[in-house]
Amino acid sequence: MNLEEKKKLAKTLIEDVESEEKGIEFKHPFQETDFENPFNTCPPAANGKIIKTQDGVCHAPALKPDKWVPLALKSYTDVSDKMGAFVFSLPKDTDHTGCFAGQYVVTQGLISQHFQLLKPGDKVEFQGPCGGFEYEENQLDELTLLASGGGITPGMQLIRQSMKNVIHYGCGKISCIPTAKDDRLKIVYSLGEAPANWEGEEGFIDTQMIDKHVSKPNGLKHKIVMCGGPTMSISCLYSLRSLGFPSSNIFIYGQFGTEQVKTVYGRNVKLASHRCDNAV
Image (cartoon, rainbow, N blue to C red):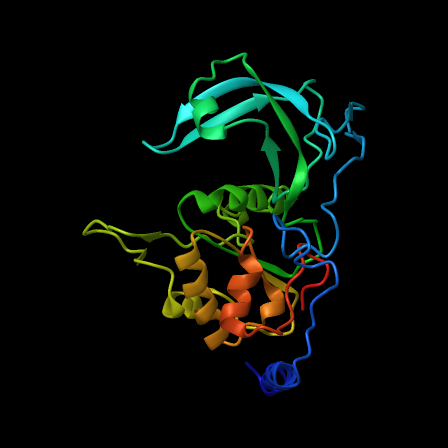
């Protein structure tokens, strides 16, 4: 960090200390009123727009935040002994979900037991969007995802959406054509049990790993989104705080995300929003 960045970070930390000493709470009045979405500063937004693509086809939202919509199971694939990938068909081939990337939906009934008995063509009622992180293009300079296990699910949505913008690149020589690697995306894998020839990271996400791979606070609009178990979340929060990342830039999926942030950063710290547009 340069001198100005250090001054800005120091100012933020001093303000945090003063607020804790005075008992001042920076929390938005709506935050922590929705049990399922404690970071939310307003009710979940739905992408209710009818989108017209270049081929002239109109794409309407299929799901509704206040209505159950039956969707038919298209396919199922085993991912592991404890996980499966379910693909459901929207009512019309031209429909879009009506959700922003990073949001989730809910279903009626006992999920685990019911889904095990589903066959292609069977229908399940869905409702949404019901919450989650709301990603919108061109609102952030940088987005960092810290995920473990099944926590990669919302992360994949965010990656796919953020990488949808195609870069059109013209060059005079074939040697100038860039490879398939896209510098907009950096993926760091960490294995619990790594083979002998593994050259990537190994073990839990820790302070050293975050310090090595995540950009330090530098005045850019940067959001850190976490999804994993409580042990992983708390551990990463301690690492982020020790490295100078402000609490106001950290969003955690799950009902207890704000409590986890407060446990590490203090009861009166400023919380992140569920949106991109207020990142510092």
